[in-house]
Amino acid sequence: MTMRRTIYFCSSLGLLLLLGFYLPRLLWGPRVEALELRPRGLVQTLVVNGRVLAPSLVQIGAQQTGIVIRRLVEEGDKVREGQLLLELDGAESQAGLAQAQAGLLQVREVEQPLTRSNVAQAESTLHLAQWLHDRNENLLKDGIISQSQLEDSRKGVDIAKAALTSARAQSRSSAFGSSLKLAEANVALAKARLAQTQVKSPAKGMVLTRTVETGDQVQPGKLLFTLALDEPLQLLIQPDEKNLSQLRTGQEAMASADAFPERPFPARVSYVAPGVDATKGTVDVKLELPKIPDFLRPDMTVSVEIRYGENKNGLALPFQAFRNGSRPYVLVLRSGRAVKVLVKLGQRGERETLVSEGLKSGDIVILDPAAREGGRYRAGLKACP
Image (cartoon, rainbow, N blue to C red; front, side):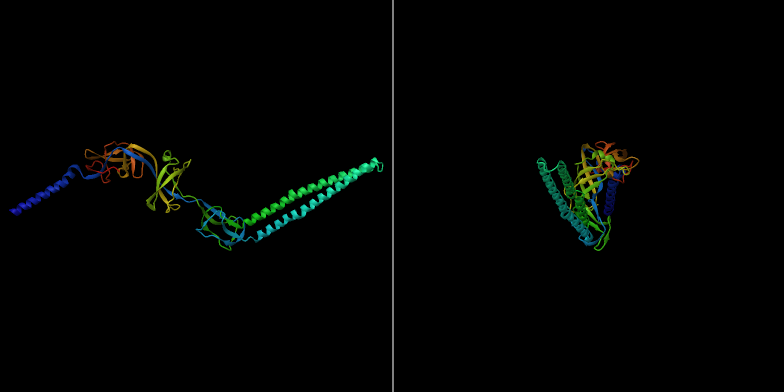
């Protein structure tokens, strides 16, 4: 009898436990994760994927044909502005410069002294002609010579003056005219050609590629080096054009590289493109970095969150609450059943989205993706994020 009572007691206890476990589920449905909406202050942010902008690239080539006699840099080398990268055989250019300098020397040391000598001789001739004419004037007064002789001496003065004018003009032509200018131009051209035998870096940067070896013959325009300029890294994002009204220069942002998500870093909007890409419907936005992280590399994929406003009394839900149909909707728990409610979404943040229409404070929104419209459920409320 005692054993029979014990079995009956255990069976009754088990039945009560089963009823205690299943009865609420049968009467009020299973417990689901849910969130009670309450107005709260919300920071409005725009989250966009982008990449790290590579520095500007410069392609360096030769300006004349020549044989490479020295190559002084390798890929990965850092170079300064004006640093010699490569040198071509300059024997022919050196000879051309020597020839041009010899021509200039001839103008300065032969032609110019000769013209100066001609001027001096013409001046002396004029001085003598003038002395003879002055003497003849006195002799005419004394009746020693005739008037015709005086006229001859005057003509001699005129001829000497014309000769001096011509000599001075030739001297100026030699010193400042075509002969000297042509000789100086030939020297400048020869120096420029000699300088072209040395290929130098146009700016500070790093050598990315090289396509030449010592002994190669190069032609004008052939690519020899690719140089990445030493510029600060920037971020480039391309948000949808509908977000253009929320973007302006100077906005603060936080970014993180996909390769190092645990190491976010600050950024600042420095450029918003004035136009929109018609094919993609996006706008280019660049961000500067107050401090460049040591792990950042060109073309890395990044995620950027730009803070553009604050809603002090907004209703927001995590992404998992929204269900996609022909129009976004959520399931709201009303009288123990899941009711479909169409919603209008506002700005999207990193983890949640504002709801501008369809819900009110106090609504209990089901977050469990397994819940179905019309089902009976009990709310397992979670705290607001």
